[in-house]
Length: 325
Image (cartoon, rainbow, N blue to C red):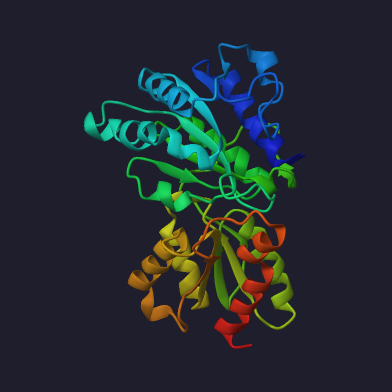
């Protein structure tokens, strides 16, 4: 095991896969000499050259379409969308092309492409560079949606995504790039669709995603002092969703809180809550609780942005409300 931050773990995954498979290439804005806006492609341009690390103009529709066509012809592009907010520029290529081709050609076509995009607020980047749009992608049949919260998960899931024969949306929270963790230097995979229990508990299940995983873990530790045993479950991938792991956890704890940074209305928490209500209602001892952002754009003001984001205080209040302690 080596100590890596998430940025380095992502870079390691891409480097190993590019060494292993000559069909893997990178494409996107500022990923060449500059090494990516968060340093995730640093050194890859010098090592693999401009045919496999392709710097593009500011034209998301152009390079997303090029990647989709390359994937259909047998290559394995890893696309850097930079900010997930820019998906609107290249939506047709993802929604109506990459996500649909395998189905429309009766399974004969494969679209092995990964779309990497950073997301999330907390850096004062404003409403057009701070969104969490995972629920948007979850509503598109044909895509897989992955959201790691640790360097270990990021590397293993990205390698699995690159090897997958379907388009994978790989979402990376900006505030997690610097988070350190133990990561094997060699190649390994984590199956897409497998959740991970980050902390076992018996009184309440907290299903958290992205940065909220670490907020939940922090509050779970504090709640233990008050006699509340919190199980923190990270889905890691939202599509496919590991329903079995979530249901088993709820059947053990009999309570569920779902927390994500995206707006609460129609977020991934709504889908998880509905699934549990349909399949494990008899096991619940309290109503399901959902935590998310209010239904408004992300504020630019630091004070308003902090108020907008769900945080540890919200999780703490929910834990005590659902257990009445």
